[in-house]
Image (tube, rainbow, N blue to C red):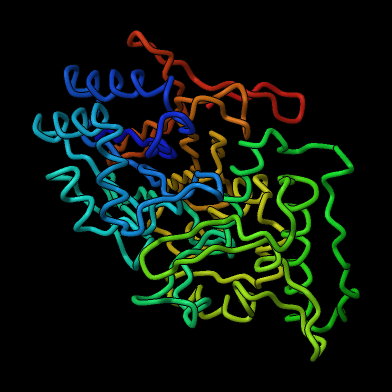
Amino acid sequence: MKTIIVSDLHLELDDRISEDVKNRPKLVDFIDKIRTEKMADEFVIAGDFLDQWYYPGSVDLPRDSREFYLACAKNNQDVVDALVRLIESGIPVVYVPGNHDMTMTHEILAEIVPGITQARDVPGLGRYRTGVRGEVVIEHSHRYEIMCAPDTITNADLMEYGYPMLPAGYFFARVGVQSGAEGLAYSKDESLRKDLPTPPAPDADDADACAAYEYWKVWADIINDWFPVKEGMQDKFVKVAVDGLAGEFSLDDLLPAVQPDGSLNAPLYKDVWKNWDEVQRRNLVPAPVSAEHSLKHAADNEERIEELPARVYFDVDPSVDVVVFGHTHVPGYKDFTGYDRPKVFANSGTWVDNNTDDPNNNATFVLVESTHEGDTVQTLKCLGDGKVEDIVWVENDHIRRA
């Protein structure tokens, strides 16, 4: 049984700011080739298919998610049509939610891509089990990050209707794209730096205070080091209209500050670190971690490759032999030892035109060949014109081939 997995297509509403324009024809050709040459038994999209996050803060977006996703699909009709052709040929297409499309419901996607199979477990999340022995698990993997996992607790008091879902990472993305649109991302211009009061260092034995401080540090880094913007701290430039969460927000709404009672908090995502244990329970995380750990390792791709697959799958479910994630945009591969059977992790990377997380690789995918005897897993790159190649990268001064 052959399964092809792609993720992080990031197809967007407007090609003028979309991350995936140049690679889109290559993606359509790739899907069509899978169909015409019967290259796989199933095709899996492991999240971030249609992107609701990657827009400057100042952009007005459709308020209703159904309206947004239908318009986004129309802007990428060639990809949608290729997926429909693949399904009609008898090759199943499976979708697993990502963080950038977590508000796309089962009904909305079924309307856009009739016949698509959807692997969901709780709102905004899903896992897909496949392989001839059910030994392969595929998910986007945002479930394990406090900044990206669906949060149905925090911000509940701000909702006009419905229930909350968007994590703080949504605002991270909106601010980041605003910075990029202004040509300021990672700028070293000292005049852009905001005067941010530094809270006192927390007591090392106070887990909540340590997590609050780490959350403050993330936003301080975003504002002054990663994605500075010309707007001031109080300027309401982040326009949000996602289902029941609507309004215009500022950096002051996001960056925690010391409150009169001595606590560290902000109007948006108040006490998000205190809610994290319950968020993980609701999101079916099998091996929870502390909020402080999640915040400290938010950008740690090494941990995601070296430790996360074992912690949440191999060590808790012996029947899982292959884990495939997306989300990080970094294609990867690792063999895990010390188990009674071979265990393999792979990351499917991304199809965005310019992969800032791994500049040498985009248009990447994972191929899993499952048999009753074992599995072959490859991380591959689509070159176009019907050609693919193994991804080769340097690790610890050694060449490693997926």
